Length: 189
Image 1 (cartoon, rainbow, N blue to C red):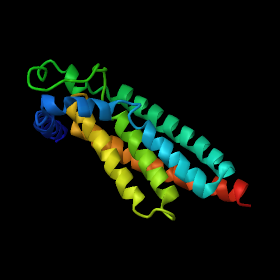
Image 2 (cartoon, helix red, strand yellow):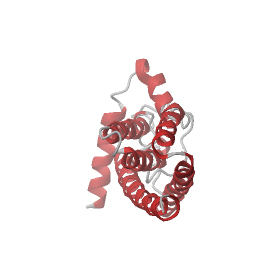
Image 3 (cartoon, rainbow, N blue to C red):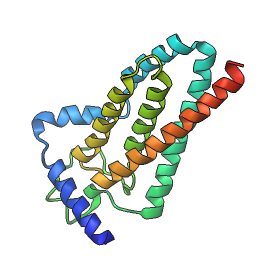
């Protein structure tokens, strides 16, 4: 059962990865770069400052730092626990995939980019939902694009990305609840 699932995952990876072309490679390398989202985060920080004020923003920033640390470290625990090689590190796939990333890395289950971007999208989308009700959908789309970029550049299977996004969504929701509690308890009291 698991072997069949992993085989389907590999087939889907090869299909999606080989949809790429040199024309789009620079775009997807930019999207997958960890600093590419900084302008978006700056705008979102400004929106949160505008809607919540400085004191609340500081609490939110602490919660976001904890959330990203949490998702990042749990991702590493899973990678070391499952030890599933990245597709770019599987000798049988090297001739079949398009590897355009800067480096391959050792293990890939599950995707840290996917979990971090999804947790941020859910968290910020929920925080700002009372003011910008459709923002969460734009952030979820952005997170999905970041997640797909990991398949495009050849470093993650679709299941790595899907599990990372799922874990990120759960983490984002839980840390949103934590932020709501802390804001109610210490800022708006």
